[in-house]
Length: 220
Length: 220
DNA sequence: AAATTAAATTAGATTTAGCTAAAAATATAT
DNA sequence: ATATATTTTTAGCTAAATCTAATTTAATTT
Ligand SMILES: [Mn+2]
Ligand SMILES: [Mn+2]
Ligand SMILES: [Mn+2]
Ligand SMILES: [Mn+2]
Image 1 (spheres, chains in turn orange, cyan, green, yellow):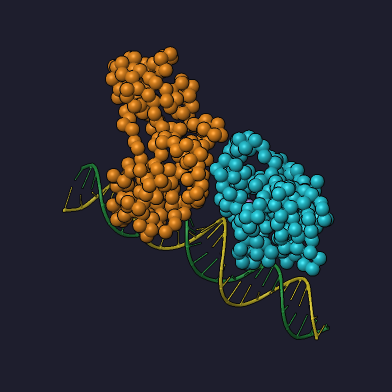
Image 2 (image 1 turned 30 degrees about the vertical axis):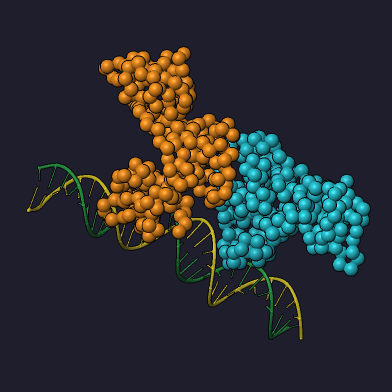
């Protein structure tokens, strides 16, 4: 059974809100994520349930099914591949790609995605550091730690961000904290948890605990 | 005023059926081209007329307006740029690109098209030899002659096809009559107008008048 | 100039995706 | 255990894009 563009978007939202299928998700949360009203969500849940991509018990939230997870991961795969294309080939900045990818992810053509993947050299991560599922939906996740949880003097590499808003991404660009940057925790202010970070062994930057909590690092 | 995907598709059909705005177009012709029913077309014509991209007098067919022509050319530009991308970068065959481009042409992002154009090195023609309008809607058309109208012993280069069906394109691939091939008219059978053609100075092929009429050539 | 045929429009339904307002169910607090 | 608050669903409406069937207008033949 085919999904419409709206159904794909809802399913992706449910996948994300449920942490990849582990939690149940509420109508209100979906409405918040999709920027629609709860009444519209109730309607859509009935449709997604009919198509057996979610399990739906009225008043008790939804679970995504195995089939639903597979579908969501395919859409996420397409989204992230297009983001890589936009950044690597068309020189988009990493904060300019999400909206366009949100449209491109709905183009129906398995051949297109296969060829795009090959053309991009089978990338494993998108420009925000999020993993790209393979064509079977398998994801190679790296263990990632929020920067604010790292110990003093620890080193690592920035691999992803939790907040992908354009404002946040532009701020990171400004201070040089791009994906791939090597960092070291130089100091932590006990009072508010803010940090002093060494970036790429050459630049010292200060950031609030809040900012650091949105930066994900692989420790090394 | 923004156009929906359906409106863009109808407007493009009207542009083509009217030979770029020169002829008036009938409801039935549009229905044929769009594979919808005349009743649906009447509905859509009212909408397009409200948005002032066509001039519509009930029962007397439609004319595309200047604004409509501009919009149609933008969509055509996007369609053809995507086709170049699919063939040049993703190694699609020229008979595999049309359907996907029919979806990709509706992605809304001026930046995307600007960057794609640059990335493809500002191509002037799509894989079927059709000209790509520039961002102002200007088209550099080459004077083209159907192969069946060429005189004996004349030479030229295949630059486009009238029929873009996959079946026809595959046939052309098989006989080596791809876009860019140099050809010479060796013989014409008076009885049925069929032709013998020398392709790339090395291969002799025979083709019916019907086939030749769908191949466009620049004479040289 | 009628009569017939063809083309186009209108009327009325359906599906998808949204909305608001009202009702119902569940959760929380006294 | 009630009362209150919150969440969720239902009912009813709108807009887009289709359809079929009926009607109207225009074009073509006799
Ligand atoms: Mn994204
Ligand atoms: Mn999307
Ligand atoms: Mn095409
Ligand atoms: Mn299209």
